[in-house]
Length: 188
Image 1: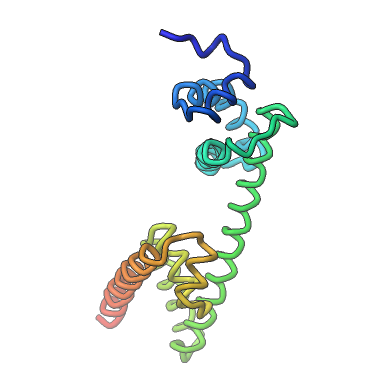
Image 2: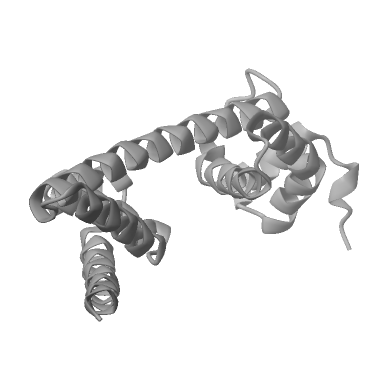
């Protein structure tokens, strides 16, 4: 069996670029997975976020490896992808938080007649949103809270339109059921 450990990074990259050899790429992942995770973890101080960004970085690097020209070390290129992935995740998180705030404001303005009702509604909406997956939450907030079209949301999330429609249908259904249940509980 061939020993990929004996090859340099540039040799492994060339092999992956020419043949998309999964074993050669696995060796690159093995070499840099821990140091990349440590970098992101120390930067974010969030283990699960660091794990996600590390995984996303290796996926993106594999998809884009044909664009790597060797003008820098593979490790440098890989870490720059990780940093961009981190920045992208922060932008998405900030956008979701802004939309969540706007959704809460719209909900409380439209449905609450008193301060007590607006607090209850805000809590109910937050709890309903917590029932959704990340994808469901993102599409519901983009399409319902901020009034974007499905096409706009699909572009923002880089998600196929069919998937977006599925997530929004699921998300709306889950929220509707949760809010109806909460309303029944408050009326008793």
